Image (cartoon, rainbow, N blue to C red):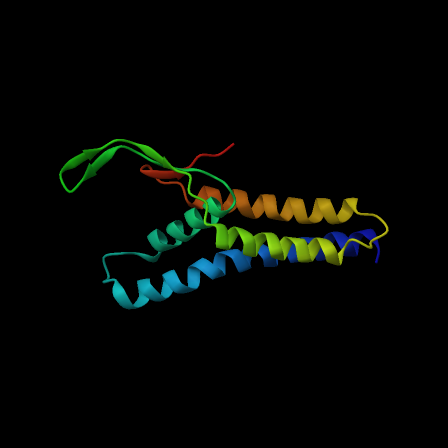
Length: 139
């Protein structure tokens, strides 16, 4: 396999790993949104929640701004709980991709393709999850 092909395939497999991680959370949450919510809750809120869980699985902290909850003032806090099951699924998929390319003659195109694709997807998702009240703590 030449460098361009390994670069492209590694990028596609990184895309698959990120979509798999999102789908594992999006399917049950989307079904609950579809059947349990009324028209007042838009799907963008549900999607941002799914992205927040996906970011938590990657070790990113989520900051919740101070505000009111049922008439009581709530100070700002950070959610740092890592969903271990989702993290293990993502790590297992990434390990499988790495094992697939372990025998390649040159590994740098694979690393660059997979890393760049995953970084772009993570940046796009983190940008989509930002609101005034709940946002990922980046960098």
